[in-house]
Each structure stands twice: as structure tokens, then as C-alpha cells.
Image (tube, rainbow, N blue to C red; front, side, top):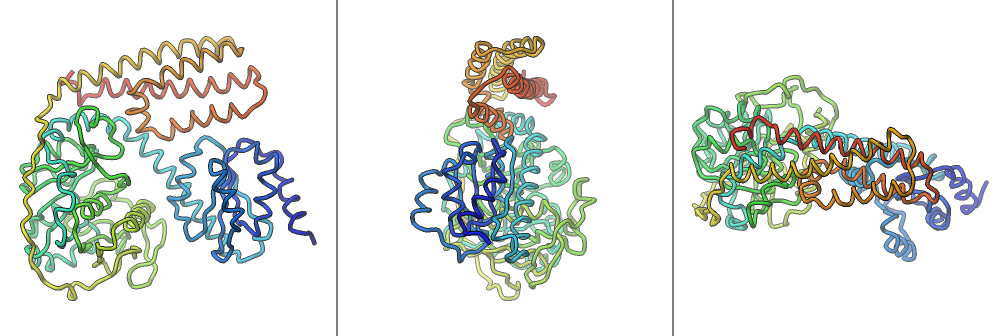
Length: 532
């Protein structure tokens, strides 16, 4: 009925009122949409455009590829096969606070509808992952500041993980997780505990010790006290503990063996006081994901996953013998994924996030590392090979020396805490002064360009405080990006009315209130009261 040019023209005309949006197009087509888009008011009026192409057969011309490269700040392109939920979540995180609108290319509405639905499902999953990420940041914002402080003596005294990079080259490891299938492999672990380096996640430790299996290493990155009380308290384990700096300090304080430390991506406190503290660029949503990164970093050539189900087996989240806490006592099936037999198995949204992260990390691990999964009923993890335990050849493990202790010396927790709290109080004072001006303007209800100039200056001055950007907002990335995006949208307007200024000031006041509250919660936290 219409030429491609006219069809795109009609399509874009329907979007003419769209402003300040993150725009997603499902379908790229022959590229006519791109050509007309970049010369339209819609392109000028909105923040960013993401094209998602369902069909790998659709190829962009060299000229169009150059257009995407030249305008990469405003244009992005993904094929459906590249569209993991995490890929879309990254866009949502970048443009948080900006309305998102999704549009299906007119030629794709009638073509292969199930594939379009699959694209929308991945997008929906990405939205949910971002919601979980935001709520996690908000929930643990205080813990991710306080626990690294409480760990400062342990961290300064521990072996830094960067001293052990590649030390286990050519060795074989077993990563023991706490999934339901763990109980099926206890005899195998008992027989082979001296032939492999055994790495246990914290939640599986209690079950292993009950069967007289003492792992060589146990790993922890759990920040909450409940994880210490559930998985570590009252255990007599004297092996090596590898911990992330946000791991609950009671776990490290009560550990009876050597400590190895890795900096958590969300910890922005420890590096202020300890030099050369390294960690992993990929955040770990679970301790098993953290452990896999550790094993690859240490140089193991073969890794065998035990109890890594990432699915509910007979409705169970944990294996028999693993102590449960409230968070997993009422889990239910939320999604279905393929297992290692090719069947569908139920899983939770949290486990699906762990699965997606596992696959992302495996993609970036060297091909020299072979990863095998012993979980027959568990979720299929791309990049791993299912193997029956009877097919695994027996071997021996070599003793690896790891006694490279920290050269820095133990830091004094009281001195560090007093210094840190002093800096937070200084930031609070700055914010308090800026809020007085904002509240005065909000009460008057009229804001001039001159008033706005002072507001922006105050904001710029506060942003220069290292405590704000490097510590507090690093743990509330969604809030930081949201307020920055609000300012960006504001800059796009050609005319500024008093009402425009008031709307931005209202958002800024909410932002200041949140940061001030976070400062107060850290300063008054009960865990720090003995060190002030």
C-alpha cells in the first residue's frame, strides 16, 4: 500500500509528540527508519534510540554502521541473539529517570509474532532485573559502607587475591554450591576430596562438614548478619576463607584460618585506606558467581560444578543438610528454564539472574578453562558441559603455597572510623546549607534564572566532595544517574519557565534528603558506636 519511505514517514509522524524519551525500536528493516529518524525532530527531541533486530539475516549497510558509530551517544543497535536481560538492563540503568517507550517497526508486527513476543519477554526480564538491582542497592546501601569499615583490620591483614593470580595453573577444582543435587554427590566428594582443590560457597560449608568433608577454601561475600548466623556460626572450620570486602565482619572476625581478600565492586570505602586492593569488574549477585571468577583468576584448567542447580529440584532451593533462613523458606517457581536433560524445570527470578550472570562470566573466561556441570536436573549453563561423575578421571592435587601476607600492616579500626565519620559529617553540613536555599525557593513557589544559577553552583560544589561521588553514590548508582539525567533533560529545553525550575528543584531536594538520610544512618549505626 505504501513505499518504504512513506511507511516510515507515517510511522514517525505518530511519534511526533514524543519528547525526552529513551526510545526502543523492535525491528531495523531496510534502514529507511534510521535514515529518516536522524533527520527528524523526533531525533532531536529524545535522549537515546536503541534498535533491536530480531533476525540475524538482516544486515546493516556500511553507511548505516558508520552512522551508528558516529552517533553512538544517541544511537545503539543489538541483534536479538545478543539481547540478554542484562544487556537491556544496562540501557535502563544508563537512562534511569527517563521515560522508556517501545515501538514495533510497522513491517514486523505481522512477521514471526512469537519472535517479537520473545524480544518483549527479554525486555520485560531486563526491566525486572533493573528493579531488583535498584532495590538491592537501596536495601544494602548502609551495609556496603559499614561492613567494609568493620572489615578494615581483616582486609589490611589478609592476603590480597592479586598476589595469587594464575598460581593454580594446570590444577583442577570443584566448586561446591548448596543446590538440592549436592546430596547426590556427597560420596563422590568424599572419595575425591584429596584429588581436587575443593572450593565451597559459604551456604554449603555446614553440609560438607557434617559429612567429614573439609574444603580447602570457603568463600563469602554475604553482607548481612543472618548469613553469618545461618551458615558460619559455631562451625569449626580452619581452612582458608576467601572473602569480599562487604562480607559480614562477624564471618572474618570469627574465622580460625588464613584470610584472602578480594575487593567488592560495590565497596568504595576500603580503597580509601588500603593500597593495591583488587577485585573483579563483573559484580557477583551470588557467592557461586564470585567463586567462579576466583577460580578463573587463580588459573585452574578444569572446574567441576557440584550443587550448582540454579533451579528448584522437587521444589527445593537448598540441599538437605543446608541450614535455611527465612528468605528461601517460601520460594516458589516463577520461571522455567531448560535443564541438562533438555527438559524444562522451574526456577526463581533470583536464580535466573544468577544463571544469566554465570553465562556472561563464562563468555569472558579463557577457553583454556574447561567447566563441567554435574547437575543433571539443574539449569543448563551455556559454556559448561554436563558430565556424569562416573566419567571424571581420578587425579591428585599439588600443594600450592599461598603464604604471601600483606605488607601494609594492620590498620586501626577506631582511627579509620573516626576519619570516615568526620568526612560524612562535613558532607552533611554542605548538603544542609544547599537544602536551606532549595526549601526557601519551594516555599516562595517562584524561581528565577538567577536563583537557578545558585542551585546549580551548590550542586556542582557538593558533587566535588569525594564522599558523595566515590562512596555514597557509588552504592546508589540509580539515584545518581537519575538526578544527572533530570539535568540533561532540563538542558534539552529551549525555554525555561519558573515551573520548570521548580520541578527540577523538587527532584534535587528529594535527592539531597536521601543522601543526608544515608549519611545519618551510617554515622549513627550501632555497629560503629564502639569505634567513634
